[in-house]
Structures are given as structure tokens and as C-alpha cells.
Image (cartoon, rainbow, N blue to C red; front, side, top):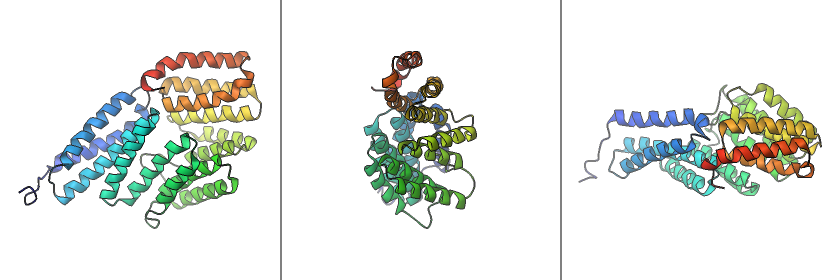
Length: 314
């Protein structure tokens, strides 16, 4: 009986769920950190509602629209868990999103999800696993994938090659990213805000990973000048990378200056992910830990830990 007479969801209900999804993406970058848990609870509750609807008999159109909403909400959950350093949970929700994207045969969504999923192995310094995911993403809709999406995927690939110290492959990937970005329509990749400034950030990170220290410093300073004032999280990451680059150059006064700037911003955003990136950089200061400026950094770290710990399973 259910198959003969599928349930029809009210169109207004579907539109409301789709609007919720758009709203979640629009506020996500501002909610990560101190508001992560509240945002996560909100997203998971809506995802449960959508999943319940999907388990009932539906028309083909309603099922397609609901599956898209489920895929988007699962991606948001994955992003929040990733920022909380909950890699296993992040991967679970990215995989759920990928299943939904495959169900509706949306290859663009699949490519974006694979790109997001790459950051888990990248932050675990498993560049080869990230490259495997990127290879799968590159094979999806090569003729129809938006240029800005392809540019973003190539930028991620460049960072993976930089981690492997493969300078030639890294440069090729950066060139491909720049090429696709120039060919694409002006604007940002939805939900990732990838643009020419973001690419500059990737270039700086790649130069840093390849120990091209002077070029890394120059590129990161250029990206700082172009960063929008509202991109607090990205600015904190650039400061961390600048501190790391100045450590490579043995310019400790500059390294400590940018380290403190990064900590100040981390105190605002309270991101466990960005804080971990800072702590990884802090290891470069071990040889100078008796310096007053380094001691000041360690004191600052100590004050931040209890503020970030409620959102971070150490």
C-alpha cells in the first residue's frame, strides 16, 4: 500500500528544510569554536528529522530533495567534528554525505565532499591517502565540474605534494589551480569561499612545507594584505604559518611576534583545530624555550587551554 500511494511531503516543508541547510552553511564559519557544540546539536537534530522522512515512502522528487538536504547537513556535521579534532566522527558524516550524493547522482557534490574529506589525512600528515581521495574527485564530471571547484581541489593537491616534498608536482598542482581559477566565473566556491586570496594562502603553506623559507614569508605577507578582515580563522592560520616560517629563518623575534598574534585570534575563535596547528608550530621553538618571549607564549597557551578544552577532546 505504501508503494502504491507514497507519502507526499508538503512543498513548504521541503523548502523550509532546504533553507535551514543554506542557513547552516552561511553561519558555519562564525559558529565554529565556542558555538560548535550548540551548532552541532542543531544540525544533528535536523539531520535526524530528514533521515526519518527518508525512511518513509516518498515520491521520487521529494526523496531526491531530501537526500540532497541530508548530504549537505551531514557535510556540516563533518566540518564541525573536524574542527573539534574528532576525526573518526568527521569521517563518518563525510561518508554519509557521500552516500547521499551518490544516491542522487550529484558528482559535483561528491567531488566537494571528497575534497573536504582530504583534510583529515592531511592534518594527520598522510598525504598519500589525501592524494587517493583527490584522484577520485578529479575523475568526477571533468567536463561539468565548475572551474572554481576544480581549482580548489588542485590547491589541496598542491599541499599534499608539498607534504611529500615533491616540489615539481606541487608547482604543477598550483599552476593548475591558478589556471582553473582564472577561467572560472568571479566569486567564491559555495561553502568553501575559495578565491584568489585563498589560493595565495595555499601557496604560502606549500612554500613553507617545501622549506622555501624566503618565498613562504613573502607569499604569506601578501596573503595577509589581501585577507578580508572577517576571515579571523584564516588570518590565525596565516599568522601560525608565518611564525613557522620565521622559525625556519631563525628570526625568533618575528616568529614570537606572529605566534602571539595567532594566539590572540585563537582566543577569539576558540578552534581546537587551529589551536592544534599552533601547538605543532610551537615545537619549533623548543630550542629557544628559555627566551622571555617564548616563555610568554607558553603562558598564553596555558591561559587558552581551559577555554578551548570544553570543545576539544584532548
